[in-house]
Image 1 (cartoon, rainbow, N blue to C red):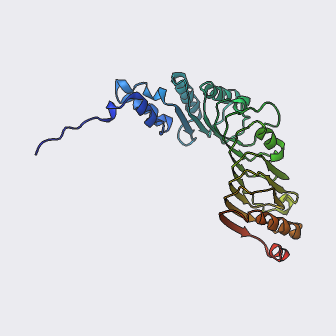
Image 2 (image 1 turned 90 degrees about the horizontal axis):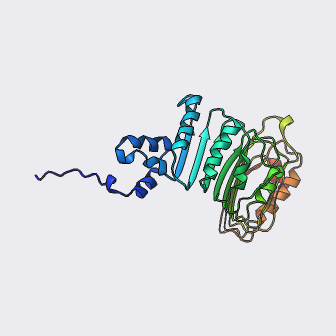
Image 3 (image 1 turned 135 degrees about the vertical axis):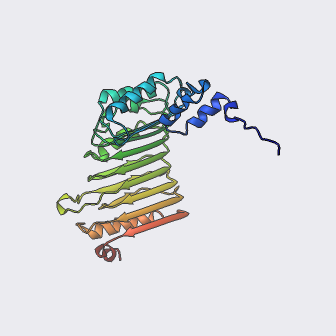
Length: 304
């Protein structure tokens, strides 16, 4: 039998193709390829994606920050497609701003920032001219309620909030600086009074208000959700604490996934049931509708 010689086809690929392949790996894995051969020594530093996920179970907090800083010092790509940073270790606002400015200066298009501790967001995030996709969380920090917001290229925005700030305190301010926004996702895990989502251009909206209260003293009887998004083609609502839900015209809507559950602490079942029926009536023209309504008997009887 004729012997078959092994061929290293991977090394025959151009650098641009290899760096594209490496962009699908976490950065620490990509950096490890530098030991493969002399040609691979600095290839990782031209990868247009940086993806860091540092857990307290993996390495100590000191090594985390030092590692990230060393990578950034050796990074050579002038254009960054994506920068993702998830950290479970504490760091200063100054250090966080240094990392974000690093990405902004490289014309980052996608930014995913997620920390498991409270540290204010660098203002430069909300004035980045190249961002197309942005995901941030307000985990016990102050959302931007004032100051400049200018995101002229942003098409996707994902906000995750567990702070005590009302969505109506920061959401209109953020949306006012996103003139081409098409997709908005909001996750909120706290009690709030009202949330009004108003935009003439958003085409896809996901609102996930997954707050389950077990204490009567903590329940908010004034909570209202208002949706005013006439250009929507897709709507996804998950709400476990609503007292009133209202919507403007949804004539462009094609698909909707709705999951609603009211609380037995509701103070006016009749008003809630009426707002619920009116909201569902606004969905009558959709081509695909998934409804999951978990209502207490008082609401069901009030709707008749």
